[in-house]
Image (cartoon, rainbow, N blue to C red; front, top):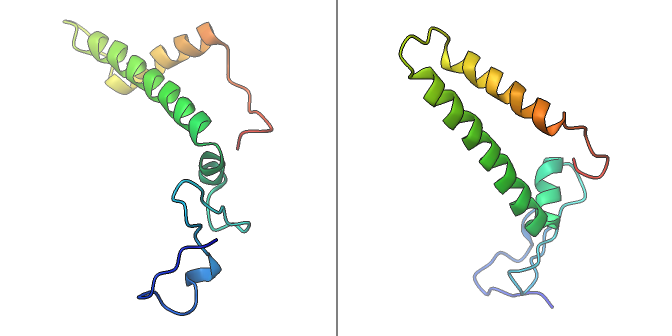
Length: 103
């Protein structure tokens, strides 16, 4: 069952018909969306968890780098310190390897 809107044009826009429920969305089969966005659309909970992990790691790297950068006598740039902190984090956690299932 699809939702109907009397004010909408007679033909669907770009051939997409939206379901009556806002909870389900059709993912285009062509390349109109980037792969990561299509994956997140199909897996909203896993996508939210992944985004949370990435945001936490970025905040950790920035927080550590910033506190080192404002220390008295520090000569390196913030970008150099952040690169060093990220390198240490990757050493601790192991380098990420691409998964064939996640775009």
